[in-house]
Length: 512
Image (cartoon, rainbow, N blue to C red; front, side, top):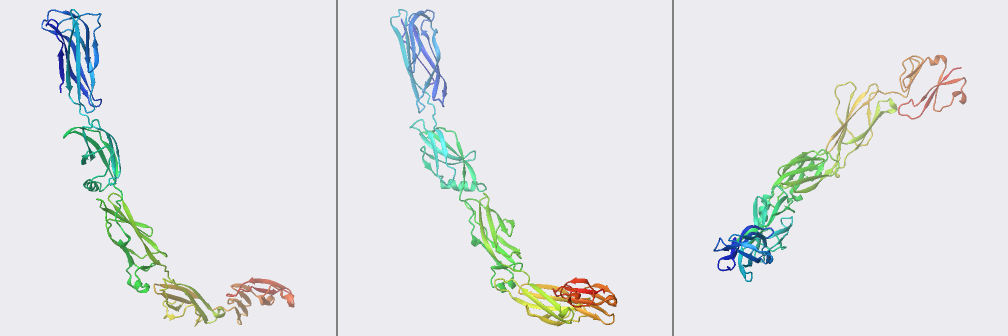
């Protein structure tokens, strides 16, 4: 290989010739060519004399670069430049190139050409293959690279790297062939991507001539991911139970949670992170609340206020952000405190004899619940303490003697297997429907009269009625005169004036 060269033509008379000189100016790898500088000038042994030359020419790499017209003459001294310029010479696809040049002219008598020629090998241009495409975005799936090779005598290797970090694998490669990453490369990427779902991978084609690397392509970068890497987490890793032994003894199973009675505890074990990741956190969601934890553990939820089944879910999240969620249905048994409809009243709204009835309903709790007791006790209103409890049957009338001259405070206590309900009420004094006060010469209807010669109807006082006329009470809105009573009658009052009775009564006064 040469970077310069020359040839000299034959000499006229042994003293005058023409010499061709060239030198390498530059080489262009992309265009695969060389540019040379060159001249064609007079030479010989006698530098002071000159001769005319005609019909000159110069060919370089098969192309005519200079011609002297036969009609012109040039005085040719030693050093006279007939031609000076450059030529760009394309190389073979493998970067090699040889070229030749020839030239001459007629000197003095113009009848005989003085010619010469030469051939040279230019320095080889390193011709690295050009990468065209890089496909594939899943580190566990197949990839493909295409490239353009400029010489069949070269070999090509594919280099896969994390750009600016590390070369992962290099191997001989044929354009367009599908391939997968080596197991060791994938394992390395698992660790490298322990906190990321993606990584950038670069592909480069290295070109070799034998064992000599002559160059490499530019790099194409793809964003690649790890998939199917969610944590391993199964529902068998989540358990729960009622830790209130008293409640379990009633329900017969720690898998039933009684509303507001059971103590719920749930336990979950650690999930298993995959493909080089590690576990980061756990989000536990139950009854509308989410709490984060860093590891598997037992959680005490305490009493649960829900009347229907609830879902307990746990989301296991790894360092990449991949997650797996498991869930379990918490079996809830509805329960609420016993309820009762309590009915109490004195006979005729006045007598000592009093009837008490407590009609109780309770929650079934999967047919495990029952009424344990219904008790009552009482005290005279204003007293500081109650008497002893008395047990009664559910929805059964009980008759009690309660002095009508006093009001009485009652306490009803109802128990089922899980809780107690208390009701409180006051039994008022006895109040007759119709009371005739002989001393006051007065009448009370559902009340006691307070004035002489008066009518007290449910607290309404009508004074001196007997001084002006008699009083009649009817169950129908019919004037007494219409039923044969003498005189003119005025309606004083109408309405439901007797406690416990729905009948409307009418009070009439005789005015004439």
